[in-house]
Length: 304
Image 1 (tube, rainbow, N blue to C red):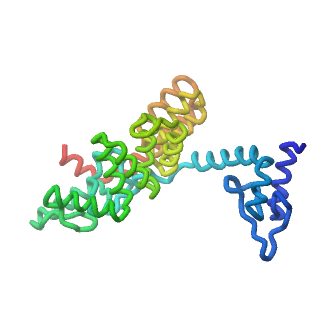
Image 2 (cartoon, one colour):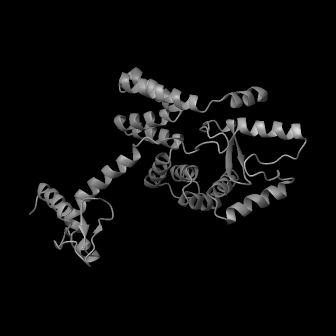
Image 3 (cartoon, rainbow, N blue to C red):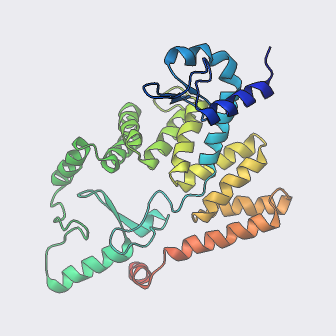
């Protein structure tokens, strides 16, 4: 019976000579090999060879797949899932009160740019219009609804997610799940986060810890600080503090305040290193500072 060490050696050899891990045939001319579906260790010439090699490869595949998932999961995103304001190109703040949703074009615009646009229109005595696409504001609730419906029919993930949120708030969890599932499939991180909460709390679906974690992870990989923070909390509850700290550091560097508080607590109790806490604090401050501008500060001052 072959040992794990022998299996590892076979995988390395297969990768070097580019041959099927099951039958050993080399990749030449019309023979094309495909990678294992879940890992990057072995390749096969056919589905039959992959099936024949499954039992032998299964343990090593599962271990490598977990490693690859962690490499992706613990990579620091360049910015949050919100991205940049499409007008001033500065990162959008995480505070939902500091940006405006425009359903006509499915854009998030910072309060600074939105305020500057309104002031310009008042000065010009012109009709209020979207600062990005220049479409006039909806004149009635019915027109606003038609705009949103049109965006949903176009499979706009932003519109689908917001429609799902409306149904969720109204308690129609079945429709909320339908819209969020579609938005998540199209890459919307807030929708992934919403699905996680549904699987966690059993709203409209059976509680499922695996699916809850999967959707939180997808959202976190996409730069969602709240999802990342929740993953850290879940890891903390399972006493996997090293993984929890990694999640909170990543979230803190995206500007998440709650994760900073968790790290502060961890530093106090000794499971967060001084250098890691200092790095997180610097990253957090840099993320917050990147969202500031004189125009945004003026809009905030005028609103208060």
